[in-house]
Length: 239
Image (cartoon, rainbow, N blue to C red; front, side, top):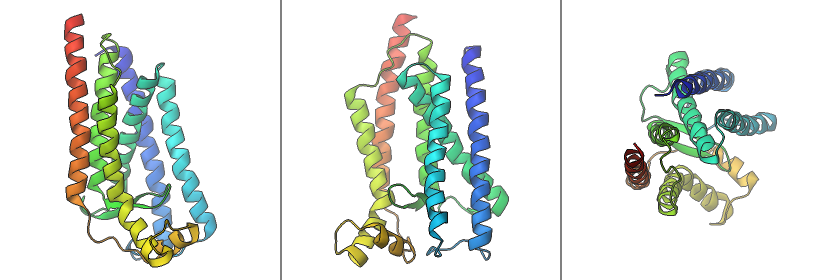
């Protein structure tokens, strides 16, 4: 591997791990303030300023990780690859640090609130970690073939397959909560902000749609495998 790429990997990894600790530290503070006896569902009521701050923190985290990608590469695809790498490392080590600091999660199948934008995402801890590992794999393929001059652009079919897979997984994360909020407060309509807030205080995730997640995850892996085979063959022809 080229020395310059190795250095970029080190920079991206160190930054992402540091961001993960910062993120986990905030969660430690919140849990000690709101859940002194341990985190359990349903959520406890929080002041609006805390909710707004949490939404802003999540958005700012994504912006910061994307900024690193923009600084490490020149092309759009490479920037996206470095963003994926940073995001995935951050996501995995976020749970590593929470386990070290809080002893949570006790296992990878514990439920967590994964994200809050545009609505709350719920899922077992292992699910975002698996997606993050696939992101690291795709990022490594793109970055690894960049200096070889191989064709790196993803084709529409590859993008489409991955996006469909991502969409299916997002349904497993957000679908049950939106359905719950809609039936309880919105009458099967998309719930408004107030209804979502109320639903968040009573919603308890119980059963995860593993079959649907597996379908979505397999679509993502299939698209990555097809892309890897194509750029590997292109690299072999050039060399």
